[in-house]
Structures are given as C-alpha cells and as structure tokens.
Image (cartoon, rainbow, N blue to C red; front, side, top):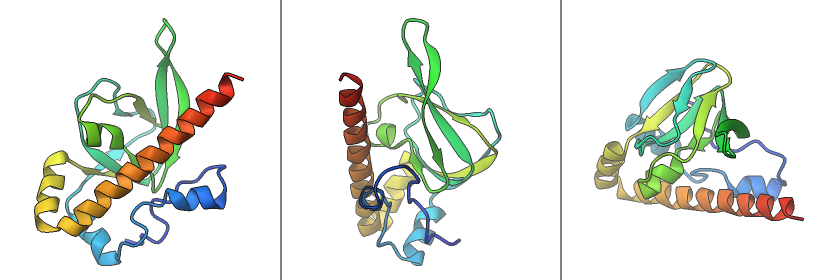
Length: 161
C-alpha cells in the first residue's frame, strides 16, 4: 500500500499547519505495514453510522478511502449537525482511544469506503512487540488531538466576537 500521502489532512489551513498534522511522517513502509498488520478492515456504505456518540468503543481508525462527516448534537432538540468532514488519510476515534471515555460525536459515511481499525487490545500487543512504533503512534495521536483542540478553541473564540 502506498502511504506517501497517508494521514495528510486536507483543509483550508496553511501549508505549515497542514504539515503539523501529518501522522507518522517519519515512518517507513515497513513501519506502516507493521501497524496495518495489527488492524482489521471495516467497509462502510454511504449513510452508515461508523461511530455512534456515547458508544464505549475505544478503538482508533485510519480512513483508507471514502468520506465521513462528524456530527454533533446541538441544543435541546439534540438534532445532529455537521461539524466537519474527514477523508482518506484521516485518523478518527483518537479521543476515546486515548482517554477510554465514550465516543463524543457521531460519524456517518458520506460515501462508500473503508477504514483500518486498531483496537485497544491490538495496540497493547503492538506495544509489546514494537515499542518504538507504538510510542510514535501515541505521541502523534497526542499531537494531532492537541492541534484539533487548538482549532476548536480558535473556532469557539472567533464565534464569540
């Protein structure tokens, strides 16, 4: 599998910002193959709920292809509205993977596609067998989560003006 453009997030951010959210930028093809050997492939179809808000699943997923939308419940009605979209190369589920709390959003498929799911148990085995790669995964997830939190903070700050 060609991972040269994997985990580069498409967005309207500057090139500098986009480079900051590249996942496992220094990983070799062998590192990628090792990581993917610990995942399972999940296929989805347009309209499928890939992640449900409130679920206890603490797995992490990498979108291999397709497009997903992140939905959040708004107001008292609880009506779901689109927050953002993710496509090929994006990491999803990192928050629950790291903190083991229920899913905070609903993610629905916009198109057909597939993702690679890394369960918590599989990551534990990966960590025992390939500790340097596992540490690199954890550090990159923390960095990406931090960037997403900063972006959310900027968004909320701008909306209050």
